[in-house]
Length: 182
Image (cartoon, rainbow, N blue to C red; front, side, top):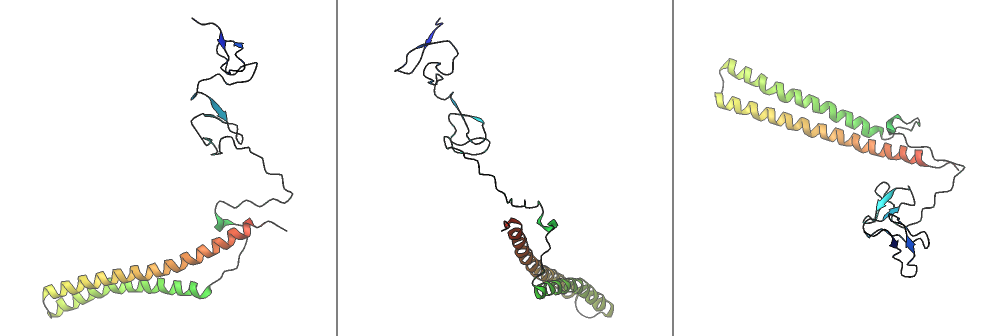
């Protein structure tokens, strides 16, 4: 059994103790390939040799990390929910907001008419004995389908208008929150 090791550096070849990870004379890493770790220059984590990027922070192996200089003016952090941001911004697109509300109201009216209309029609035609039973059922089902589809269509338009307004408002709020003071 070998009790003494020699440095793997061909220029050194000095005697080194067993279990030494690097030569005390020349600094050469004595571990076999695949067992050598590299330390991330950004976060300090030891990573296996096989990794090209740090496991913790994704920093590139061997790339020097220079921390950013401290600034006298700091950017306010963006709140987790922008809608709770302390910054008050003006409400824009009043006409689109009203139009969205109008589509929403029309969607509910169409749904109510789409459900009640065929039911009322069915009650009237059955009580007066007019028309065939299959025709009445078909008209009722078609009326319910069209009422439901009309509701979904108008509700979707209403929600899409509000979505676009919210996207614009959140983009504006984010822009305001991330601007650095002059």
